Amino acid sequence: MAFGWFVFNGNNSCDGPTDPANYCLIKIMPDCICGNEICAIYAEINIVCCKMRPCITSQLQTEITIAKLTGKPSSNVLLKNC
Image (cartoon, rainbow, N blue to C red; front, side, top):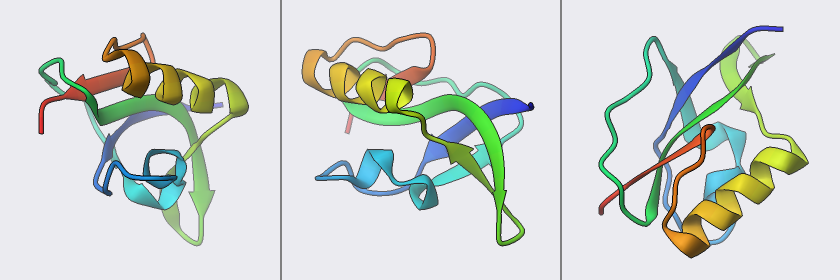
């Protein structure tokens, strides 16, 4: 299993942050300033149709939801200001 950082490039409404299509794999952990919007996630790399996408597990979905609600990042979910 390989893991990597994925930057969020979708919108933060509804299911956007839990949709793997809204993320792009990046080479290094991004610098994100704390805020209340999803910046990036650390997840297992899943190859779908020749594109690197994050494998968003139920645990990671929970971390994303908690981070958005509390404004507190986790080790796998980074936040940014709008």
